[in-house]
Length: 226
Ligand SMILES: [Ca+2]
Ligand SMILES: [Ca+2]
Image 1: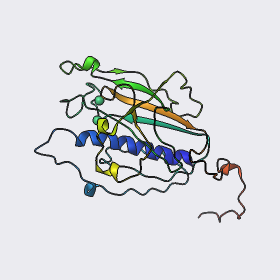
Image 2: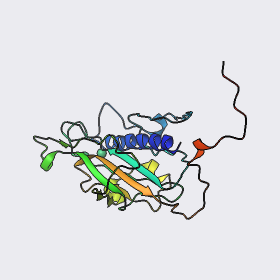
Image 3: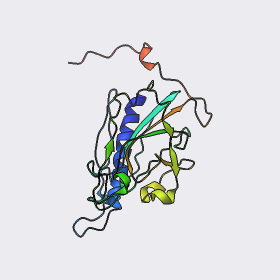
């Protein structure tokens, strides 16, 4: 259950980052910048879980409900909106930059304690004349609880000024959270973050539903579906 919401969240937030980059691009005479009034609300119900991939959530903050259990492993793949062949943004006119921030209602926040690793970066040497990128294959189980990230570096914290978030960011609670990325917020374009929350950061006692699927329900089975 947790995984459901986790993946829905991450996919959407990553897409949101990509859109921020788009919105910061050079003014276009043909395409105006998207506003929140251009968005449509997505409400999703699943029995029991799903993975959602959707591109270009306009410059937004995505809020979902998470049923936590601890320890809670969080894995995030975040992408700058870079051309996969040049590593550049804004129709290959600019290097561009990235950034990621997260806060959960239990006090979980992004900061330099998170693990971070780059998997695609460029343009190498900041060469925008002959731009090229380098890639490392993304491990298939990068989001697994038992994935070994012990050799990964810690994330680097960036200031709000460095990332330059837009209006929806200021309408939501990110207090205490830090913008993070790998060492180079401009050149590193695909990164993965991992973090284990061992106990509720706010110290509150919560019910543990992690074994929900092993419990026989009190109520009788539903009628067979026709
Ligand atoms: Ca960007
Ligand atoms: Ca970039």
